[in-house]
Amino acid sequence: MARKLGVEDSLRSRERRSWQSISVLFLALGINKQLDLQTAFTEAGRVLAQYQGWYQQRQLVQLAFIALVAVTCVVAAFTLLIWARQAPISTWLALTGTTLVLGYVLVRAASFHHVDRFIGQRVLGFRWNWILEMGGIGLVILASLWRGRTGTSTNTAAIRCQGRERVYRR
Image (tube, rainbow, N blue to C red; front, side, top):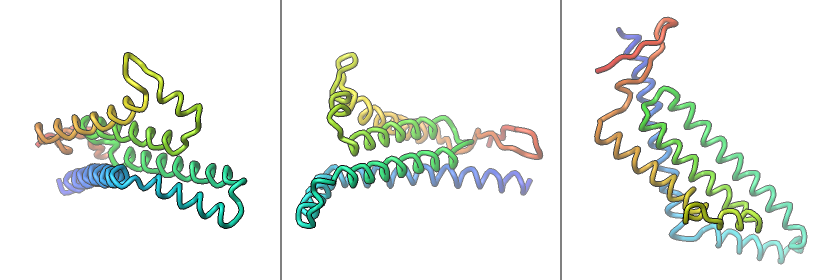
């Protein structure tokens, strides 16, 4: 019994970390959106590049920055997936939405002209950038409402116990 509770506590802890990470990520993205920090960061980089004389070679720095953002997004997504591997569906829905938003952030960070053309295209009347950003946010909101309404945490999570998979319900 103590082993069951330990595993269940571990699952609950991982799920909690997933939701906390999603919250912190969205808070940071909201602050960035309000303060337009990416524009300030870009302008500061442009001024620095011109001042130091490497403005003509800025593409290499831009590529390194995009690679850093991509690696950060991928690591964040995989970390959240690992933490929530046995989480309820509501948590997986939130992670799917978060992954869409991270994909949108990555696309916006790349901001190449052909990428901008792609995300500006319409599908069923909606632009891709809106589908990725608002669709992801909507999924996270839906998942949090579902989780709050049902009170689901790890109540029905599959728990591996002595080599067999069992489902424990409270």
